[in-house]
Image (cartoon, rainbow, N blue to C red):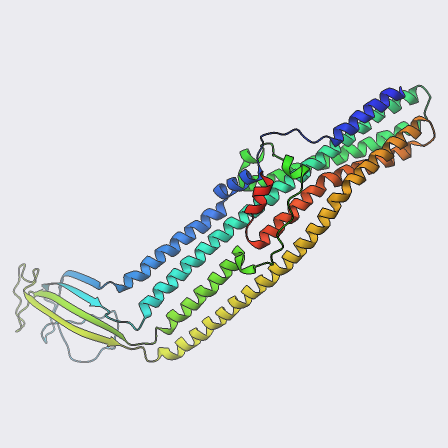
Length: 457
């Protein structure tokens, strides 16, 4: 009986120690590529960049002449009067004769006005530069979004692997306790062990099954998180875990961190440049505006200068032509105070954006130092867990042998089994912790391709 128990228990321990066989599953690089193709926020940023590019073309249209055309036909009275009306949009100005009657005539008019600004003291070029800065900021936002999605997908991939390794350890624990429960039941039935031993093993088995249920729940949640990046079909594929769970990444380079290389810093610097471009554009607004204008028009009316109405269709076709060319100069004198306040407001935005850039650099430095410390600690743990597993295996074998020889209670076996389970979990997660710390280091550096290259080899 005890020989059979020992053989079954050894089989359970072997199951817990086994690494899943190699398989052509979903690699972490494939998961990141799928996320970059599918995640909606990337498409949002892409369309924002397209809108910013259209803004440049819109700003460049200011260099083109403005051409306005008009054609109008109406039938109305032509009574005029002397006096003043302040500018308004309700009462029309009338070309007619001094009279007051309700007789109406046809009137018509066509015309074209061409306006062109020969020089603008740099206003249009400043507006184009501001639009270009907006496009550069949108492009930086797109790249930062793509980077965030790639990092999040890689992290979700590692989370799924960690959850699955925990589930495997929990499953192995349940198998071991089931073996022990059957053996203990036989011993109790033969009155070789007290019934309390069987009750203890049954309780431990129930705890192990609860842990397994929780581990499976964690796997489901982790895969759901991965699915939001790579899609449901891709997220439910088997993951290629051999490289990440059996080896450690190479030591990271010792080069100092360059915060400016991180996409977050690049985006913020682009935001500062955009704010500065908007300030330059604003500073160009308090200048005179010069417009060269050319006019050609024709009018027609059904009324003579002495007040007689011609009747019929007279006035429906223009009969009198005019043309003209000139230079118009406008200057918003009282806008100076508003523009000064707008400039002060814009300068405050620039200072805030610059402060945000410094804050991002400080945060990246802190994250980098923390990631280095985490990596160092994770490597130390990964170096120690094989000893932890080996010692736990020895302790379990000894506790089992003592229990078989009736030299130790079932509690010693239970404690040794729990120690063994924890050692297996620690060993399985230790290497993944090193990979996760390496991912954080490369994330802060601004390029996770070295991490993906190592993880997918």
